[in-house]
Each structure stands twice: as structure tokens, then as C-alpha cells.
Image (cartoon, rainbow, N blue to C red; front, side, top):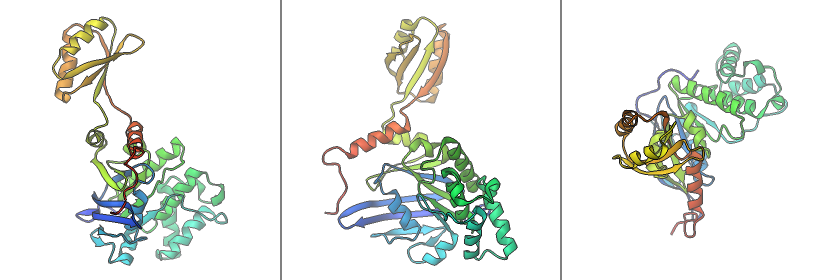
Length: 332
């Protein structure tokens, strides 16, 4: 696959990166560190600066200023060296219609000079297996589905065993099954020690796929960390508890309102059983709250934490972008 555990240090290191297009600031002084062995998600609405960041990382574009290193190699000063350890998959990468899947991969294996003919064929078969396309080995490229095509391009990106992979919107347009297969492939690659940086404008998609996330908007990093940390850092996800009781609904609501850590009873659901409460306590207080309900003799059928969906978070960010005076950043 991609080789076992990678070198020490960060796989991707970005410091004070800025990308200008004339007087438009696409990426505004961002810094980011991604370790080896991780699937790391870069998410944000269209125009957030994701693709510009990826093009700099892939040595396809010079930044206005900043520092970028991949596996400890200066990507701005040593482009050829970086390209040997980098796998880049652009959004909607084309594949030729007049080649079969194995021929497409054999062409690139030859371009990468991956040993003898036998070694190249073995590597092609291995990469097809990694992305669950072994059964399509002899299929024409133009007969593959959108999901299969995306995974074929991913197989091509894996051929030279890159230590760092940069994937721009790889799940775009895929059906749920194809997204799941892609997710499993990327997680398997990371377990072998490579670092995978993947972008999307669908936050929930990356939350399932990635161990850590970074949310970009208008060229800036708004939040970074685990999915839970990102939710909390953005401050757009009020912590709520959904409690379903079999009876004594009003009594339960009154008791909850008097408990420390519960801000207010937000609402009763229409079926008269579910109570939604805004909660300001920590996990220990949440457990104590459930214990208290049981001690009150209240028949609790369900007790779980809810939060705003990731889609709601990104919609809120996009709506902020459209507010007067909050348009594209420009150089002054």
C-alpha cells in the first residue's frame, strides 16, 4: 500500500500561507499542521479557499507568501522532490474513454517508472484492490460509474506509494455506497502511515471520514480539531438533551427547570413524550441528571444529547458571507 508509519513530525506543515488573485485574498495567512497516519478534512463553502490551498500544496501554484513543507521537505523550494512523495487528486479528474482500467493505471505506473513490467502489473492489481475495484480490472473507463471513476483516479494517485495525499472533493457526486467505500479506502491508507488531506463542502461527510477537521471560510481558518471540538469552537451548536418519558411530563419539566446545569426546558414535542432542554453542564453533570430523573421515579424511555447538524453549521457560515459588508476579502 503506502508504506508503514511515516517519518517523525508533521506530514503537512503550513505557516502563514497567503494567496492573492489581484486584489482578492483567496487564502489569508493560515497555519495548519497535519500528522502522519491521519485522514484530515478541510471543509468550507464554495470560495472558502480550499482549492487554492491545495494547489499550493500540490506545487501547482506559487503563494503570495508563506511556508509549506510536506514530510519535512520545503514544497516551495524543492518541488520535484516533493512530487515524489505526494499524491494529488484534483476535483473531477478526467480519465480516457479509450483505455481499460488496468491500462489507465499501467500507463501511470510506467510514467512513475515503478520497476519491471511484472512489478508494475502487481502494483496496479494491488491499488485496484485497495479501492475495491479488482472486479473492474478489465472494464473500459467510459463504462465505469461516477463512484468507480473516482476510485480509479484514487488508485492512480496511490501507485507510487505517496507519503502525503491531497484529495480535492473526492466524494463529490458520489452515492452513499460509493462514499462509504471511499471512506474505507482512505482510512485504510492512513492506517498504513500516509497522511490524507481531503476537502469537501459537506461537513457531515468529512466528520464520518476524518479523525480531525479544519473549517475554512473566506480564506481563513474558523475552527480546527475533532468533530466535537469544531462544533463547540464555532459556537453554533447549542448543547441540548432530548428526554423521552412515558408519563408525568409536566412534573418532569418542572423538575428539570430547577436542576443546576439545565438552562431551560425548550419545548415539548407534539407527541407529548419528548422534552428538549438546553444544557450547560459537562458530561458528569449530564450523567447525574439522568440518575436524578430515575431517583425521582420518572420512567425515562430515552435520554440523549442532540446538536445542530453539520449542514446547519455550514448554512449559517454561508449566510454570514452574504450579509452586507461581509463579502470577499480584498487587499487594502
